[in-house]
Image (cartoon, rainbow, N blue to C red; front, side, top):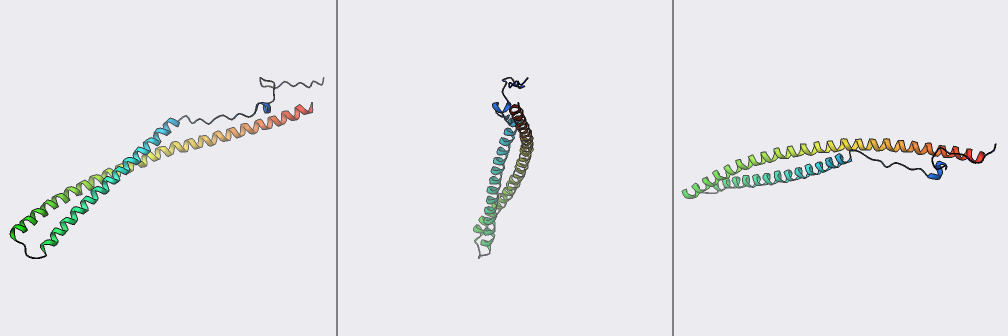
Length: 167
């Protein structure tokens, strides 16, 4: 009973090597969530950048006002002033002091906003990285599984080839 016809377990009665090895595509089910997290991180970074620029602008305004105030104190020491000039300088200083105090408060608020934006950007980055690492782990597990399946199919093809040529 030397029958050269072998019935293979697959439906087409061909060995697996004749069909070829088909790898499944990796599908990360949380990809939409990861994309949302990436968008959130980008938005947080943009907000941080705007807050930083606002802080630097406010700080520059404060420095300019403080510089004007210092110059006004230097002017009084340059010589004798007429009473109306002295009054004008005094009013100018009071205005600059009020402006400086207001600008200090603006710098403080801008600094707080910058800190909040920095914390939000870090939080958004951390959230994205958690999902990114999960995706990488799942991709690694998928690749291992596919490599094992490919090795198993290769081993089966070799065994079937040996059995096919033996008969």
